[in-house]
Image (tube, rainbow, N blue to C red; front, side):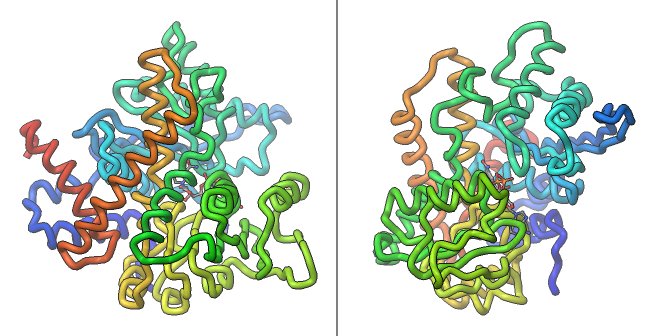
Length: 418
Ligand code: NAD
């Protein structure tokens, strides 16, 4: 099996882009590493009175284009290399949609599924006490990601405001609406991704209203992808999954019903709409005969071990890093149109940026205005990437790297860094 360390993958992807672009070696070396990173250790009082020690990270990868920006994960398998890779991808993501921000990311090693609400609140506040001096609306702005929620953002914003002594809504995005969240942030990642799927469909001549879809992962990104792809295009979602496995029904899976089941039972895997509805593993789901495959769970799901079996015409990567470099080559060779992660899932950070802008002005937009602005950003980014891929005769992920790296390199050059 090829390399699966996400940061090594991120560096390898950058190296490939640097070669194609004939990038200045100093620019390349500077972009290979985070500018800053913080490792924190946090004591947290648990409900049973014991004290548990948690470890966390915050990586500020590159701020040449603006304050660093990126989500925060609560996950038992979190590592510094995962966070570094995600912070690098955030740098390319904010650049590809051309918003004035850099890239960062955070993570705490914990299992939120085994923690109570009060323990999660104490951990969230402890994390802000540990990194509070190094973040801020003009330096580094966290946001929700895997297993972190608007409620967690609210506790973090509150703790930060307590430290500063006044209300600072702009320190974090993905907040609940009454605390300065943006309309449209909830489904922004999936919605942004769907705008790119729409453009890819037009380009490839695929009738999305006739298309079948499989979605891996049923959290914020996956659930809304199910809702929106059916709502916006009339596509038929035939398979969905979560960490416990998936379901497949050729008649299509109704969003409202699957969601209600997931809410009640905690998983989609036991849902059965009819006799044809059957269980599939997460591995089998990826290889189903569908038009559109949406990886919306974790990294390293498509690699040299299964890329040759992917039958989808479009792979819309709502997850970060779902495809390895070897997987990319195989998909490209087989004519699969990949909408790469940091383009496809950039809707979340784009609306997070809109949230920062609204917080700064203390003036809030209607949801239609958010959708229109998001569509404009995503559509422009999609075509910039497609054109770069065509021009350099490379796959779309390299096209996206070329667009983003050129923008970040230009900002560093103008600042006189290199
Ligand atoms: P989430 O915590 O809401 O949901 C994660 C989902 O993945 C859950 O349904 C979980 O059961 C499932 N999952 C976990 N391990 C799995 C496995 N091994 N196989 C299959 N499913 C598994 O997280 P999310 O916010 O939806 O994020 C999902 C992906 O999208 C991540 O890669 C994240 O970085 C990326 N992403 C999210 C956002 C956002 O705004 N939420 C933005 C950009 C990128």
